[in-house]
Length: 350
Image 1 (cartoon, rainbow, N blue to C red):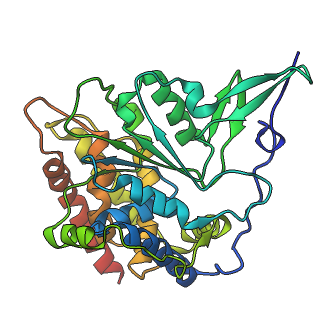
Image 2 (image 1 turned 90 degrees about the horizontal axis):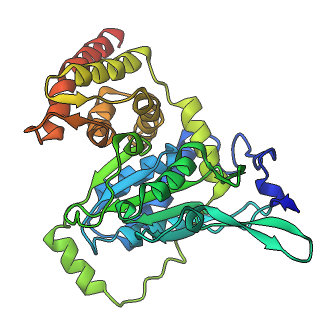
Image 3 (image 1 turned 120 degrees about the vertical axis):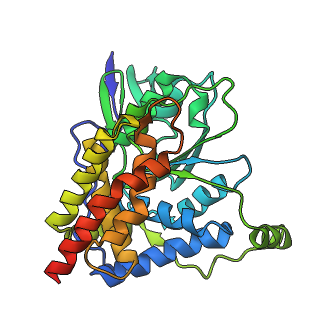
């Protein structure tokens, strides 16, 4: 018997080519226009979540993943679905869907996520049948309700953009993006993610209930038809080209890099912290900061970008000593001195 993999997913097959820039993406102004189209799609579906939408947008263009800690019925599925619908597939070499939703349950198996080898009696070979993780945007609902083995299968996909089945690696699309959710209140029958796995997520976002006016607007517009045909979509190639332009055209000074390292060292040395943040978190922070700078109309990373993102980037990567619960306070106190030093260095270089 022989094994046969799908040609475009074979372990040695090259990834689909991505142009340096898409036909309509030439510079930061084009990237900003693309970001606003993505934002418009999400805002048309989810009300009162502008801060969350901005962080999700940063993660998509920064090539990261997002963990939402939310209450049931808070709009997480609608948000992820709107993001998936905003992206059109312009890669004819695959049949990967734009959006898939995975409901994690205790009886789930790794093969239910990654896919499985199927035996074909006619050809006497095994063929790989792709799992739902093969999509551009993947919503993983209640990630902490399945076993660590299934969690690990997903996190390999997040870290390496590939899955391994029967010792054969199958590449995911370069755009692959995960929005995972967990309920902050219900701990019965859950398998909390350890820090090493939480470290795979660029952001952890705590979603609160929306304000009164937004909730009234949800009720007022519920059931009414929403015409999104006038909202222009963005293509897969556009998003990938935007990521490359952000890496190349938004300047990150050595002083910004030093500030990030100094923040990490301050957190590791703080007496309230048992385990500090990883070097991986600093690497993932760079494209996120570049994306935020672009959204703010700049081609360089500034101290205010670090101040805005430091909590969602670092809060889930730390373990505090018993009795200390306010991780946001610890982070904000530890970043003051490095940010002040960065601000002074920026003024001297102006």
